[in-house]
Length: 76
Figure 1: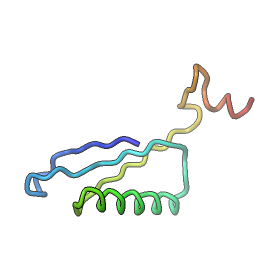
Figure 2: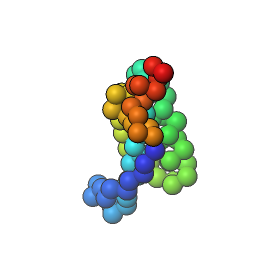
Figure 3: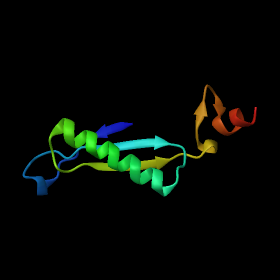
């Protein structure tokens, strides 16, 4: 997960955290739960009303670990 803090002029000069989650493909119901739960924690910890969550799905043919594609590791 990554955290960014873009400036949002609509928040009176406050920063709005953006959480980026990179991982394998998941169904839309799991995405809803992931966004809801991450948002709850960020709001609680930061005490702010606005949080952006971005989900980036990475297929195994686009991920390399230790010099080998994840797709190939799954086959082996």
